Amino acid sequence: MPKDFLDLEATPERLHALADAGILRPDAYGRALHLAVASPERPAWRAFLSTTLMALGSLLVLAGVVYFFAFNWAELGRFSKLGLICLGIAGAAVGAWRLGDRPAGQFALLAAAVLVGPLLAVYGQTYQTGADPYELFIGWGVLILPWVALARFTPLWMLQLVLVNTGVILFWGQRMTRFGSYEARLALVLGLLNGFAWATYEHFANQKVSWLQGRWMPRVLSLMTLMPLVTLGILFIVSRHDRSLESGVSLLLVLGALVAIYALHRHLHGELFLLTVGALSVITLVTTAVGYFLVEVTRADELTLFILPMVLIGEVSLAVYWLRHESQATGVSEET
Image 1 (cartoon, rainbow, N blue to C red):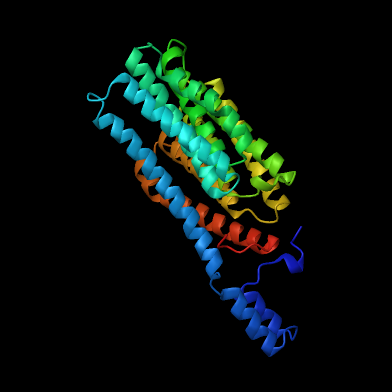
Image 2: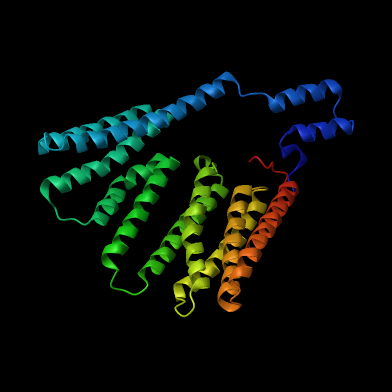
Protein backbone atom coordinates (compact mmCIF):
# COMPACT_ATOMS: atom_id res chain seq x y z
CA MET A 1 0.00 0.00 0.00
CA PRO A 2 1.48 3.42 -0.92
CA LYS A 3 2.40 5.86 1.77
CA ASP A 4 0.00 8.50 2.94
CA PHE A 5 0.48 11.71 0.96
CA LEU A 6 1.66 13.66 4.00
CA ASP A 7 4.25 10.96 4.80
CA LEU A 8 6.02 11.29 1.45
CA GLU A 9 9.42 13.00 1.40
CA ALA A 10 9.34 16.59 0.24
CA THR A 11 11.58 16.24 -2.81
CA PRO A 12 11.97 19.11 -5.31
CA GLU A 13 10.22 17.02 -7.99
CA ARG A 14 7.12 16.48 -5.82
CA LEU A 15 7.03 20.16 -4.80
CA HIS A 16 7.29 21.20 -8.43
CA ALA A 17 4.38 18.90 -9.32
CA LEU A 18 2.29 20.40 -6.50
CA ALA A 19 3.10 23.91 -7.72
CA ASP A 20 2.13 23.01 -11.28
CA ALA A 21 -1.15 21.58 -10.01
CA GLY A 22 -1.91 24.83 -8.21
CA ILE A 23 -1.86 23.27 -4.76
CA LEU A 24 1.13 25.34 -3.65
CA ARG A 25 1.16 29.11 -4.10
CA PRO A 26 4.39 30.61 -5.53
CA ASP A 27 5.51 31.99 -2.14
CA ALA A 28 4.74 28.67 -0.39
CA TYR A 29 6.50 26.77 -3.16
CA GLY A 30 9.65 28.86 -2.74
CA ARG A 31 9.63 28.38 1.03
CA ALA A 32 8.99 24.64 0.75
CA LEU A 33 11.75 24.24 -1.85
CA HIS A 34 14.19 26.06 0.41
CA LEU A 35 13.34 23.80 3.34
CA ALA A 36 13.57 20.65 1.20
CA VAL A 37 17.11 21.33 -0.03
CA ALA A 38 18.42 23.25 2.98
CA SER A 39 21.50 21.97 4.77
CA PRO A 40 21.12 20.71 8.34
CA GLU A 41 21.21 23.29 11.10
CA ARG A 42 24.36 23.88 13.14
CA PRO A 43 23.21 21.77 16.14
CA ALA A 44 22.58 18.80 13.82
CA TRP A 45 26.05 19.12 12.29
CA ARG A 46 27.58 19.46 15.75
CA ALA A 47 25.84 16.31 16.97
CA PHE A 48 26.84 14.36 13.85
CA LEU A 49 30.48 15.42 14.01
CA SER A 50 30.64 14.80 17.75
CA THR A 51 29.30 11.26 17.42
CA THR A 52 31.47 10.45 14.39
CA LEU A 53 34.67 11.77 15.95
CA MET A 54 33.86 10.01 19.21
CA ALA A 55 33.44 6.71 17.38
CA LEU A 56 36.68 7.17 15.43
CA GLY A 57 38.53 8.24 18.57
CA SER A 58 37.30 5.18 20.45
CA LEU A 59 38.48 2.87 17.65
CA LEU A 60 41.89 4.54 17.53
CA VAL A 61 42.33 4.32 21.30
CA LEU A 62 41.38 0.64 21.31
CA ALA A 63 43.75 -0.06 18.43
CA GLY A 64 46.46 1.79 20.33
CA VAL A 65 45.92 -0.39 23.40
CA VAL A 66 46.31 -3.55 21.34
CA TYR A 67 49.49 -2.32 19.62
CA PHE A 68 50.90 -1.06 22.92
CA PHE A 69 50.79 -4.52 24.44
CA ALA A 70 52.05 -6.13 21.25
CA PHE A 71 55.07 -3.81 21.08
CA ASN A 72 55.92 -3.84 24.81
CA TRP A 73 55.06 -7.48 25.49
CA ALA A 74 58.56 -8.54 26.48
CA GLU A 75 59.23 -5.54 28.73
CA LEU A 76 55.99 -5.73 30.74
CA GLY A 77 55.52 -8.12 33.65
CA ARG A 78 52.43 -10.23 34.01
CA PHE A 79 50.93 -8.01 36.70
CA SER A 80 51.63 -4.89 34.67
CA LYS A 81 49.90 -6.35 31.64
CA LEU A 82 46.82 -7.52 33.49
CA GLY A 83 46.70 -4.46 35.74
CA LEU A 84 46.79 -1.94 32.90
CA ILE A 85 44.02 -3.68 30.97
CA CYS A 86 41.87 -4.08 34.09
CA LEU A 87 42.41 -0.42 34.86
CA GLY A 88 41.27 0.49 31.36
CA ILE A 89 38.17 -1.68 31.64
CA ALA A 90 37.31 -0.27 35.06
CA GLY A 91 37.82 3.31 33.89
CA ALA A 92 35.68 2.82 30.79
CA ALA A 93 32.95 1.07 32.80
CA VAL A 94 32.87 3.82 35.42
CA GLY A 95 32.77 6.42 32.67
CA ALA A 96 29.85 4.63 31.06
CA TRP A 97 28.04 4.48 34.40
CA ARG A 98 28.56 8.19 35.08
CA LEU A 99 27.71 9.35 31.55
CA GLY A 100 24.56 7.23 31.26
CA ASP A 101 22.70 6.86 27.97
CA ARG A 102 24.54 9.67 26.23
CA PRO A 103 26.69 8.73 23.22
CA ALA A 104 29.85 9.23 25.28
CA GLY A 105 28.61 6.74 27.87
CA GLN A 106 27.60 4.20 25.25
CA PHE A 107 30.95 4.39 23.48
CA ALA A 108 32.72 4.10 26.82
CA LEU A 109 30.82 0.88 27.51
CA LEU A 110 31.69 -0.35 24.02
CA ALA A 111 35.37 0.32 24.78
CA ALA A 112 35.10 -1.62 28.04
CA ALA A 113 33.50 -4.55 26.20
CA VAL A 114 36.21 -4.55 23.53
CA LEU A 115 39.00 -4.48 26.15
CA VAL A 116 37.69 -7.71 27.68
CA GLY A 117 39.09 -9.53 24.65
CA PRO A 118 42.70 -8.33 25.11
CA LEU A 119 42.38 -9.13 28.83
CA LEU A 120 41.49 -12.75 28.06
CA ALA A 121 44.24 -12.97 25.44
CA VAL A 122 46.87 -11.57 27.82
CA TYR A 123 45.71 -13.89 30.60
CA GLY A 124 45.87 -16.90 28.31
CA GLN A 125 49.34 -16.01 27.03
CA THR A 126 50.70 -15.18 30.46
CA TYR A 127 49.54 -18.32 32.26
CA GLN A 128 49.45 -20.63 29.21
CA THR A 129 45.94 -21.89 29.90
CA GLY A 130 45.94 -24.02 26.75
CA ALA A 131 42.52 -22.74 25.73
CA ASP A 132 41.54 -22.98 22.09
CA PRO A 133 41.00 -19.74 20.13
CA TYR A 134 37.25 -20.32 19.85
CA GLU A 135 37.02 -20.48 23.65
CA LEU A 136 38.48 -16.99 23.80
CA PHE A 137 35.75 -15.52 21.62
CA ILE A 138 32.94 -17.50 23.22
CA GLY A 139 34.16 -16.53 26.70
CA TRP A 140 34.51 -12.93 25.56
CA GLY A 141 30.88 -12.92 24.39
CA VAL A 142 29.63 -14.53 27.60
CA LEU A 143 31.46 -12.05 29.84
CA ILE A 144 30.14 -8.95 28.08
CA LEU A 145 26.61 -10.32 27.66
CA PRO A 146 25.21 -8.47 30.74
CA TRP A 147 26.57 -5.17 29.41
CA VAL A 148 25.16 -5.87 25.97
CA ALA A 149 21.74 -6.76 27.36
CA LEU A 150 21.53 -3.64 29.51
CA ALA A 151 23.15 -1.08 27.22
CA ARG A 152 20.43 -0.80 24.51
CA PHE A 153 23.20 0.15 22.05
CA THR A 154 23.14 -1.50 18.63
CA PRO A 155 26.94 -1.42 18.02
CA LEU A 156 27.36 -3.50 21.18
CA TRP A 157 24.88 -6.04 19.85
CA MET A 158 26.78 -6.11 16.57
CA LEU A 159 30.01 -6.75 18.49
CA GLN A 160 28.30 -9.61 20.33
CA LEU A 161 27.10 -11.14 17.06
CA VAL A 162 30.56 -10.82 15.48
CA LEU A 163 32.07 -12.62 18.49
CA VAL A 164 29.50 -15.39 18.22
CA ASN A 165 30.15 -15.78 14.48
CA THR A 166 33.90 -15.86 15.01
CA GLY A 167 33.59 -18.39 17.82
CA VAL A 168 31.37 -20.64 15.69
CA ILE A 169 33.77 -20.43 12.73
CA LEU A 170 36.81 -21.28 14.87
CA PHE A 171 34.96 -24.08 16.66
CA TRP A 172 33.87 -25.57 13.37
CA GLY A 173 37.39 -25.44 12.00
CA GLN A 174 38.91 -27.10 15.05
CA ARG A 175 36.27 -29.58 16.14
CA MET A 176 34.15 -30.44 13.11
CA THR A 177 36.77 -31.17 10.46
CA ARG A 178 36.34 -34.92 10.91
CA PHE A 179 32.77 -34.69 9.63
CA GLY A 180 32.07 -34.58 5.90
CA SER A 181 31.15 -31.31 4.13
CA TYR A 182 31.72 -29.33 7.28
CA GLU A 183 32.19 -26.09 5.28
CA ALA A 184 28.67 -26.40 3.89
CA ARG A 185 27.26 -27.08 7.33
CA LEU A 186 29.16 -24.13 8.74
CA ALA A 187 27.77 -21.80 6.06
CA LEU A 188 24.25 -23.09 6.75
CA VAL A 189 24.67 -22.60 10.51
CA LEU A 190 25.97 -19.05 10.02
CA GLY A 191 23.07 -18.23 7.70
CA LEU A 192 20.54 -19.54 10.20
CA LEU A 193 22.25 -17.81 13.14
CA ASN A 194 22.42 -14.42 11.47
CA GLY A 195 18.96 -14.87 9.98
CA PHE A 196 17.56 -15.47 13.46
CA ALA A 197 19.29 -12.30 14.70
CA TRP A 198 17.91 -10.38 11.72
CA ALA A 199 14.35 -11.64 12.24
CA THR A 200 14.57 -10.88 15.97
CA TYR A 201 15.70 -7.33 15.29
CA GLU A 202 12.91 -6.72 12.80
CA HIS A 203 10.33 -8.16 15.20
CA PHE A 204 11.25 -5.86 18.07
CA ALA A 205 11.71 -2.90 15.72
CA ASN A 206 8.14 -3.53 14.56
CA GLN A 207 7.11 -3.42 18.23
CA LYS A 208 8.35 0.20 18.24
CA VAL A 209 11.33 -0.39 20.53
CA SER A 210 12.92 3.06 20.41
CA TRP A 211 16.60 2.11 20.16
CA LEU A 212 15.93 -0.41 17.38
CA GLN A 213 14.52 2.04 14.84
CA GLY A 214 17.75 2.52 12.90
CA ARG A 215 18.08 0.63 9.63
CA TRP A 216 21.86 0.13 9.39
CA MET A 217 22.03 -2.97 11.58
CA PRO A 218 19.28 -5.02 9.87
CA ARG A 219 20.89 -4.20 6.55
CA VAL A 220 24.23 -5.53 7.77
CA LEU A 221 22.45 -8.58 9.19
CA SER A 222 20.79 -9.22 5.84
CA LEU A 223 24.22 -9.33 4.18
CA MET A 224 25.57 -11.63 6.90
CA THR A 225 22.56 -13.91 6.36
CA LEU A 226 22.43 -14.06 2.59
CA MET A 227 26.13 -14.26 1.78
CA PRO A 228 26.72 -17.79 3.15
CA LEU A 229 23.34 -19.02 1.90
CA VAL A 230 23.87 -17.68 -1.62
CA THR A 231 27.37 -19.19 -1.64
CA LEU A 232 25.86 -22.57 -0.79
CA GLY A 233 23.25 -22.05 -3.49
CA ILE A 234 26.02 -21.47 -6.03
CA LEU A 235 27.70 -24.71 -4.92
CA PHE A 236 24.40 -26.55 -5.35
CA ILE A 237 24.11 -25.27 -8.92
CA VAL A 238 27.67 -25.96 -10.07
CA SER A 239 28.14 -29.31 -8.30
CA ARG A 240 27.45 -32.15 -10.68
CA HIS A 241 27.46 -35.27 -8.49
CA ASP A 242 28.00 -34.14 -4.90
CA ARG A 243 25.10 -31.82 -4.20
CA SER A 244 24.66 -31.84 -0.45
CA LEU A 245 21.50 -31.54 1.58
CA GLU A 246 22.85 -28.36 3.13
CA SER A 247 23.22 -26.61 -0.22
CA GLY A 248 19.70 -27.63 -1.24
CA VAL A 249 18.27 -26.33 2.02
CA SER A 250 20.18 -23.09 1.54
CA LEU A 251 18.38 -22.46 -1.76
CA LEU A 252 15.03 -22.84 -0.03
CA LEU A 253 16.18 -20.47 2.72
CA VAL A 254 17.28 -17.91 0.13
CA LEU A 255 13.84 -18.06 -1.47
CA GLY A 256 12.23 -17.64 1.94
CA ALA A 257 14.50 -14.68 2.69
CA LEU A 258 13.56 -13.04 -0.61
CA VAL A 259 9.86 -13.38 0.17
CA ALA A 260 10.47 -11.95 3.66
CA ILE A 261 12.45 -9.03 2.19
CA TYR A 262 9.63 -8.09 -0.18
CA ALA A 263 7.01 -8.38 2.59
CA LEU A 264 9.18 -6.22 4.85
CA HIS A 265 9.66 -3.69 2.07
CA ARG A 266 5.91 -3.35 1.66
CA HIS A 267 5.34 -3.29 5.42
CA LEU A 268 7.87 -0.50 5.93
CA HIS A 269 6.58 1.34 2.83
CA GLY A 270 10.01 1.34 1.26
CA GLU A 271 13.22 -0.58 1.97
CA LEU A 272 15.16 -0.32 -1.26
CA PHE A 273 18.48 -1.48 0.21
CA LEU A 274 17.11 -4.89 1.11
CA LEU A 275 15.34 -5.12 -2.24
CA THR A 276 18.66 -4.39 -3.94
CA VAL A 277 20.40 -7.09 -1.90
CA GLY A 278 17.66 -9.54 -2.87
CA ALA A 279 17.93 -8.58 -6.54
CA LEU A 280 21.71 -9.09 -6.47
CA SER A 281 21.20 -12.52 -4.90
CA VAL A 282 18.78 -13.52 -7.65
CA ILE A 283 21.10 -12.17 -10.36
CA THR A 284 24.01 -14.13 -8.90
CA LEU A 285 22.09 -17.41 -8.78
CA VAL A 286 20.44 -17.02 -12.18
CA THR A 287 23.69 -16.03 -13.89
CA THR A 288 25.45 -19.01 -12.32
CA ALA A 289 22.69 -21.36 -13.46
CA VAL A 290 22.73 -20.02 -17.02
CA GLY A 291 26.51 -20.22 -17.20
CA TYR A 292 26.49 -23.77 -15.85
CA PHE A 293 23.86 -24.82 -18.37
CA LEU A 294 25.76 -23.32 -21.29
CA VAL A 295 29.12 -24.78 -20.28
CA GLU A 296 28.21 -28.16 -18.84
CA VAL A 297 25.05 -29.07 -20.75
CA THR A 298 25.32 -27.49 -24.19
CA ARG A 299 29.16 -27.47 -24.20
CA ALA A 300 29.01 -24.14 -26.01
CA ASP A 301 32.07 -22.56 -24.39
CA GLU A 302 32.63 -19.91 -27.07
CA LEU A 303 28.94 -19.07 -27.26
CA THR A 304 28.86 -18.66 -23.48
CA LEU A 305 31.26 -15.72 -23.69
CA PHE A 306 28.70 -13.95 -25.88
CA ILE A 307 25.43 -15.02 -24.27
CA LEU A 308 26.34 -14.65 -20.59
CA PRO A 309 27.15 -10.88 -20.73
CA MET A 310 23.86 -10.31 -22.57
CA VAL A 311 21.99 -12.25 -19.90
CA LEU A 312 23.70 -10.23 -17.16
CA ILE A 313 22.87 -6.93 -18.85
CA GLY A 314 19.24 -7.99 -19.20
CA GLU A 315 19.06 -9.05 -15.54
CA VAL A 316 20.54 -5.78 -14.31
CA SER A 317 18.22 -3.73 -16.54
CA LEU A 318 15.19 -5.66 -15.31
CA ALA A 319 16.30 -5.25 -11.68
CA VAL A 320 16.75 -1.48 -12.09
CA TYR A 321 13.34 -1.15 -13.73
CA TRP A 322 11.71 -3.16 -10.94
CA LEU A 323 13.45 -1.19 -8.19
CA ARG A 324 12.35 2.10 -9.73
CA HIS A 325 8.80 0.79 -9.97
CA GLU A 326 8.85 -0.24 -6.29
CA SER A 327 10.29 3.15 -5.38
CA GLN A 328 7.40 4.91 -7.06
CA ALA A 329 4.81 2.49 -5.70
CA THR A 330 5.88 2.98 -2.08
CA GLY A 331 6.82 6.65 -2.31
CA VAL A 332 10.40 6.21 -1.09
CA SER A 333 13.17 8.17 -2.76
CA GLU A 334 15.92 6.31 -4.58
CA GLU A 335 18.57 8.01 -2.42
CA THR A 336 17.40 6.25 0.72
